Length: 229
Image (tube, rainbow, N blue to C red; front, side, top):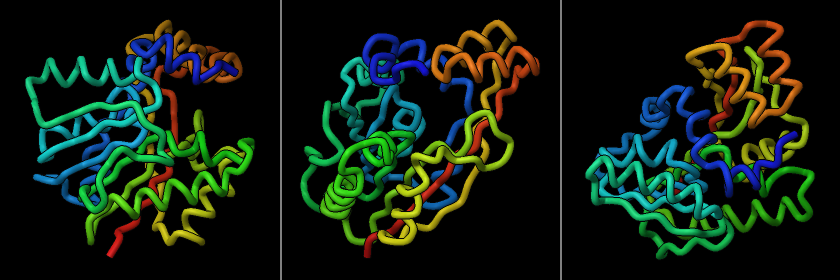
């Protein structure tokens, strides 16, 4: 399996190309919370998958990530857009550089899982710290929306075993609502499909793409959301 941490630091542009093959998630977010004129925080913004589609509607948006290389990709895209209502900053989810009660909406895509995997020591404490920070920075009636892997290469939900306890914790202990959506990759060619799936998902899924000639590579995403009153 490829080393994702290394990819985020050294191959951010290729990662951004991969996720550009997935659908725009603004509609999925606005099905839960309208984003117009909100102060938004994107936790684990990466190369700007969520930041860049929300920024045109937001009052302000702050993109946080542990990888400066990924944030550089986000910043380059936002500069090109001409928008000036944004900021990027390197940060840890467990210690957000954000004032108390200063955010209307938090989004986090495929990021908190790196702290919540059962393969990670003290994962429950990690999630407790993240949720404490989320509740600290949200204004009353603020909302947090979390996207996570719910089945890569699968037409129906098939979440990784090492994330199931984290998902149950969000729902049972922290009170999140949950649904799932499809976030399929639509590649331009079989060559691109194979190259990009091997790059991030490894040879097993890369072989599946080749063997089944999958120019459309299926993926399910879990969506969790909570409003703080």
